[in-house]
Every structure is written in C-alpha cells, then in structure tokens.
Length: 114
Image (cartoon, rainbow, N blue to C red; front, side, top):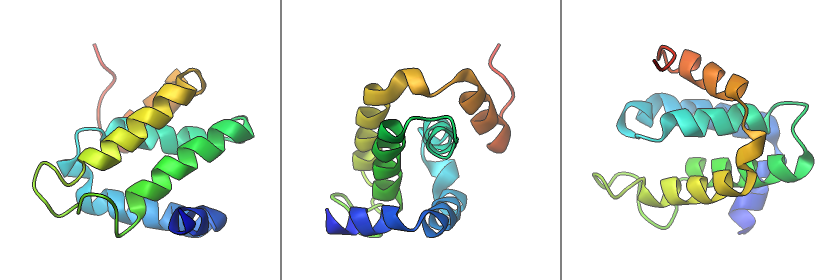
C-alpha cells in the first residue's frame, strides 16, 4: 500500500513510468485501450478528485515493478492488473467519457469502432 501511495505522489513521475511501461507491454495487454482511457480521465482537469484518486491507484498498480502476479508470466502476468483496472473503472465508469476513449484509441493507433 505504501508503494502505491508513493507512486501516486509524484504525478509527473507516474506519467513517465506509465508511458514507459505502456510502450514496453502495450501490444501484449488486451485492456490497453481501457487503461489509456483511464489515464486520460485521471489527468483531465475536469475529472472529480475522487475519480482521479481511484484511477491513479489502478494506474500506479499497473506501473509498480512488483505486484501480486509477475508481469513477465505469459497470459497470467497482467491478469491482476486487469482486475484492479476493471474494479476501478466499475467504480467511476460514468466519468470516463467518449472523448477519453477516442483519445485512447487515437493514441494506440486504432480507428473508431464501426
């Protein structure tokens, strides 16, 4: 828990670590679009503080080098990250807007869904 608190204290460091890890593993995680949309929501100035805290906690868990299941394990490595993100998104789903999702798709190089 202390590691997550420390990870969320320095927002610029958290952003840098987020993008670094996403570049390394983005192609291997099926929840990349949700993760990036959550990031854009968490860094949006119009997002309520409560929502930002929840999403930043999930993002911090994603970037932590040590977590419940090692990220280097094939298939299982990111299952815990996906579960934490899913729980966070469930709590704040109404705050992640279509604009956040569109920006996430654009960032990841995906076209808008049909």
